[in-house]
Amino acid sequence: GQQLNQSPQSMFIQEGEDVSMNCTSSSIFNTWLWYKQDPGEGPVLLIALYKAGELTSNGRLTAQFGITRKDSFLNISASIPSDVGIYFCAGDAGGTSYGKLTFGQGTILTVHP
Amino acid sequence: KAGVTQTPRYLIKTRGQQVTLSCSPISGHRSVSWYQQTPGQGLQFLFEYFSETQRNKGNFPGRFSGRQFSNSRSEMNVSTLELGDSALYLCASKDQGELFFGEGSRLTVL
Image: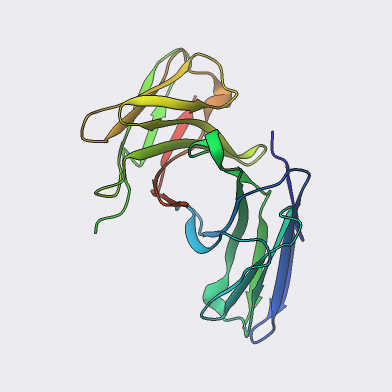
């Protein structure tokens, strides 16, 4: 089963607000990834993190790979209505994990105009 | 480059039937993974193929199988369908450390 604890489970925010979500794990991961999924679609990769302590931005999105390699967070600044969706964190243990990602339960984001 | 393509997008089967789902990875990607997504269990890893060889397998019964062809296209098969197999089945292809997903095949078992 899943090993990643993602929080919060859901968020209701006003347009323009900043958003923060995080994932923690009992295991170490070599890579952390953040995905966004819209209803009926597959997850779309937002940010990939490869080194402990790494801070990476993609437009209004910023993500960090925790120093312990057991956690990661994602921030979205100045939210807009199209940010609505489900955000997933995923960890890749590397080595012989071969394409196996462990996913968090997802954070459902609702943005009120 | 075209993304990961999955067919069919939607299908309905009855219990006991079998189903085959198809996936074409991004051109040049040789690793293909399959995931099952359900509201209760979330995203669960099924298996991964590279150069026609299964390198990793998740905790699913033997009714779930897959294969990969020499052009990296992959198929997964579920035999003797059960109601609980209703799910979104996602295929992903890998480049470096990043997994790119297709839009999925939505299977409903009645």
